Length: 227
Image (cartoon, rainbow, N blue to C red; front, side, top):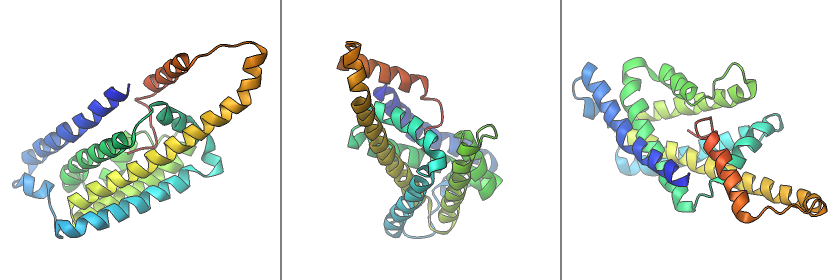
């Protein structure tokens, strides 16, 4: 399961920019120059992009941690925690998503259809603007504003910083959801342990990991509160 996620991240990093370049090349000349536009020097984009990403990421963490969104956070934090990702996995996946998705959406699609339409489409594709789920939509509205901020950053600063900002958002959310999921798992063990002893239930660690992996597999294609 973890291997599938890492391969998907690598595919995003490789295929999304290629798709963006192909789309942009159909409608615009100098497609690569547009896609990799950098009005400001890269060495200035790196710290500012990371700072923006962490700020937006902690903002997303605040939103998803509100009591009325508790059920959403608990559901997806258990899934993320169940993947048992190492720290380098989180960094790798965040960077792949950040650069792959930004080069496609902010680099290629935004110049064609506009900043706000791109932001709305991007968040809707991730499943966060769902009229059937108002809680998820609240989170989606915040994410739309955050992605619009990345769009403005791209136009005024550059795509490299925007990509790092995107990666920063995912990194913060990954860390938060993993921490929250582990906390729920520990609380659940403490609560259920007496009952398991009463009925002499014998669920070993391998069985537990299998169940967790199956749940994660069944929900991989659903919104995970990440970008």
